[in-house]
Length: 557
Image 1: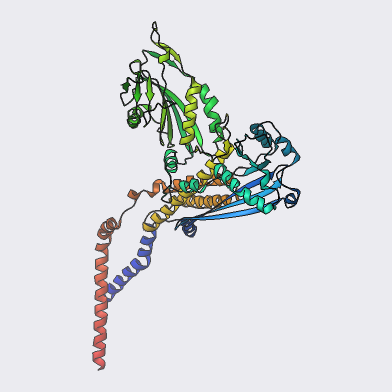
Image 2: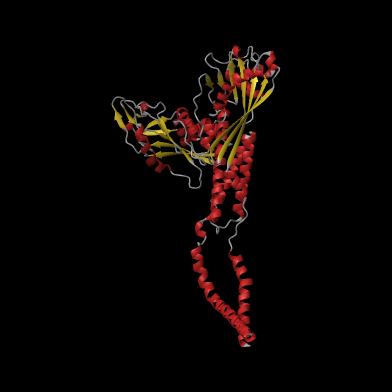
């Protein structure tokens, strides 16, 4: 009887451990992993981008015959497909609409200059972001000089001149076929190009540009970011000799702020300025007797930045990239100071820029010295000259490419804003694709990490950020496909912000979780003393049951 009670007690304890204890332990120690849209993330790993641009070709009076005009308006669609790698495919669609000019547009095309015509056409109707309008004008038009066939304006408008031979005795289809090469050249200048889009995918695919200019452009500009910090610094290494005054606040408002206002759809910008005294360059200039001046050659420019950068300071409260613009006034012992290029020629701007860092300009004040000069010399810096250089450097560092137009093209100056509308569109195309590529890479990498390490907690906040990033990516790609560039850029920015928040969430830190060997080290001392008696009792019960069964069989025989 006593043995029977012991067996029942052992069985009861084993049942409680198996039925209650093990599920309770499993439930209380399991890793919480919220649901993630894994199938949608896998679809994003195979990136298929569709970019669509709307082009409107307007024929002015005298560019089409009456027979050709009967077939207008007309719409044509051209598709291109490029396979970047096995996981990335690009498809471009150009939807071209042909029509004749309205009476008001004809009046605008009669302006004395192309710039005035461009402004008048812009006042009539503003083209949406990402679209282009090409006006075809007759050979007799006085808007363009004789050696210019295409004019690129400050807005989203271009003027293309055709000769009378192109239209006489030909059908509309033949006219459009002859006009197509010029329209393609205009698109390459004013809209996105395959090279620009491929460069924007550099975070996702390995890009091997075919020319040195593409390599320089892709390496010079800062990566896409939600915000940028711009710092203007005046370096005065000799305050005993030079008392410098620069109206940086007024100069920024006049020259820099219009550009940043136009770039506001891309990112947020903040600016600050400082004056640093007794700050020397990291390289000692050499005196060149042939120029009777001190010089810095191109090979020594790389050693200038690091010593100066240590004095600049940084904004620890912000994680945004910093663009540094330094104005250096040489001390009296090394003045004047000029920068020379690799060909030993003087750089006209007396400035240089460092990729993804900023620019430095040397400002000589030796013209203020005289035979009876009293020190310190009071110097009012010419901010128009300085900001002209900084503005050009800022455009390059933000990714605004300086294109060389094809022969016969005339590109209008960008104006007071420092940026033409079509240049903004080109940058928005590139940034949208870059954001999508970066966000997809981040999300797919996070999904692979969470799949490989099963004991990482996926809390609801991470799941929400991942779902938000996936949804924003899908919306951005859909807007690109229909040509809504503004919405595509906005959704791509939301996608990259959400993906980075999820990827860098503190709860994903590896040190918060125990590897399997540490788990065994914790659980074995806890469960082994309890499990051994239970297992031995169970083995004894099974052994006794088998022994009884053998005895019964022996009695029957």
